[in-house]
Image 1 (cartoon, one colour):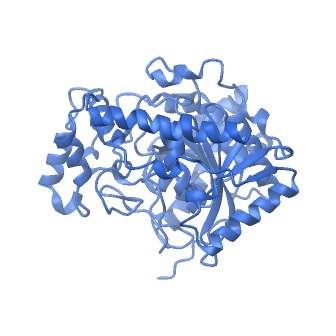
Image 2: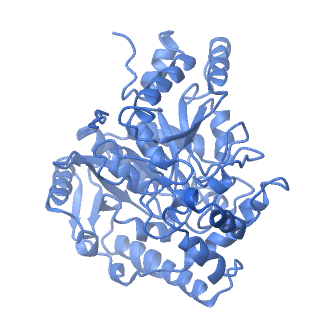
Image 3: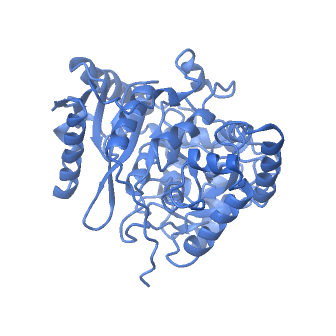
Length: 485
């Protein structure tokens, strides 16, 4: 039986390449074929924004290198997509989905993009995303950008794609690439991964460098792996991590970062693990169907030896309100990013982007730009506002010290377990890691997952528990990609 592209994992691909059955160049061509048939035709899910014109040459060169010296890493020859807010110093643009930045080329790779090239990955293209990571306006649907249009959920096109890493999730779900990289400020990896039936790992802020990523919030932003299996997500994570002199957040991981996270892939990882369920507040929006899927997942974990602490409520959950942190940090962070694009860049400030949109309203302002305007005219960009400082301190207190930390300490927990991405608001403000894993499907065919969350740099425990659950409850299935038009 020949190599099967659909649902192929990184280990399976490497085995096929090692045997000579497959080359990286052939693999890129296979993905091109699926993109042509289903992303830009047929169901037209619209997840791929731009393809790297040199991808085939890069893949062929890596094939030559493999034959001569062997693979660099498990990612050697693996085609992947990057979210369109991650810089690549090549022939592709980095626009965050904005027409104002449609002609913007980065002068060099983002730190993580350079790490991927070093590992031998093929950066095949850029994934579509919610414009400016869903910070452009109120009421814009997830997965929409003025440059790329609307990403559709391949499981049910009437269901949202979720989060701003929509294209990254959908491309992986549809087997348009092996793995992808998304970014998250508050749910933008977890949410689309949940709705796309894939694994999404949102790491501790600081585990992966943010240098060269068009930002939203300096205190909450992070990139992370998106994959169809926990193992593939971890293999990608290995290549992404590292201390970066340009990103102070990465310095906090000294002595806590692991060279190889595959060491924590433990099929018996649930045995004896103490898992807390914060029932209060976080379950209020669940449908009966979703609740049944979640409770069924708990039954699986109990059978595998987990100790379920139900309920382990977070006492501050209802105190966490709107925060001005992201609004204030956006102007400051974006300005710093634009300044590094060089003197030839057309967009030099947030105001330049707003003015461009005003000058091209039909193309750019289908849903408006109220959030961009608020960030420009109600914040200074200096992070000195009293409200900002108070909100930042409140977020840390309610979400971190008196929230997750206090709950896990009180109940002696290894992790908290949330339905889908419903815990993203509290984990993101704490800067803490989460991983979402598929748990089931609704009667409408929409995926529904569970999300393990822990404290800073406790990715090893998340990986162990998520992998154990996946190995004993592997229910992921690819979308049919049938067009009903």
